[in-house]
Length: 119
Ligand SMILES: [Zn+2]
Image 1 (cartoon, rainbow, N blue to C red):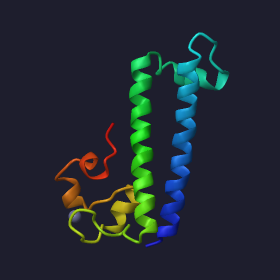
Image 2 (image 1 turned 90 degrees about the vertical axis):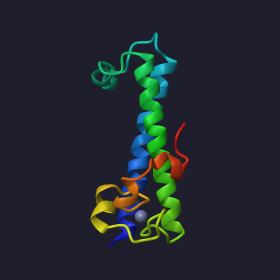
Image 3 (image 1 turned 180 degrees about the vertical axis):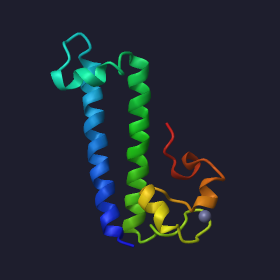
C-alpha cells in the first residue's frame, strides 16, 4: 500500500476543506454585502445561518479526522485498527483515507467516540 500517496490525498483534501471553510466564514461575516460572483451558485444552497453553521461544523470535524489520520501516519500506526489492532483493509483506506478502524469496528461504535472529533 502506498501510504505516502494517501497522505498526499489527505493533505490536499484538508486544504480544500480549509479553503471552503474560509469562504463560508467570509460569507457569514459579510452577510449584508453582495456575494462574490464565484459564490453565487453555492449561495442558493447556503441561504441561512443554520445551514452554514452545520456545514462549518461538518468541515471542522472532517479536518479533525484528517489531522488524526495524519498523526497516525507519522506514528506509523496508520494501517492498524485503532480499536482492535488488526490491519485495516487496503481498499477501505483508499475509499476512506481517514478511516482509523477496520470495517468491523467501524460498524460497532461512533467514530466521534474514538477520535474526539465531535463538537
Ligand atoms: Zn478493528
